[in-house]
Length: 138
Image (cartoon, rainbow, N blue to C red; front, side, top):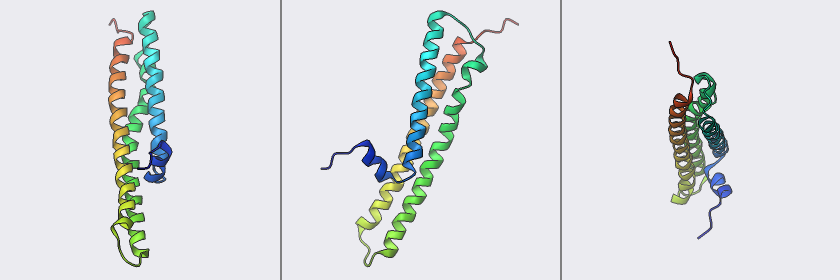
């Protein structure tokens, strides 16, 4: 059995995997930055306006919306590759179709996973921002 590396998984998922991976990296970076910022604010007892605390979190919402669409784009390109392989093959074999279907399913799953992670992190960090913001006295 061949050992799977991140690079080999990215190659098997096709070209759409690279922007999906970039969205995952963006999600992790924003989540870590906001978590550290919120912990430091909580420790210091400082309060900031809610808009300032929530501003970077809108990127997580964008990632949550874009990643499934990119995953579905990977599904379409995988299916195109599968049917192209079938049309070029002298005889149709399951292996010819399976590689395109693997690409299609892999990118869809990866896009959905990224969307779920970004949505959950965005929700949790939004709750934390609400707890750390300045309270209106009026």
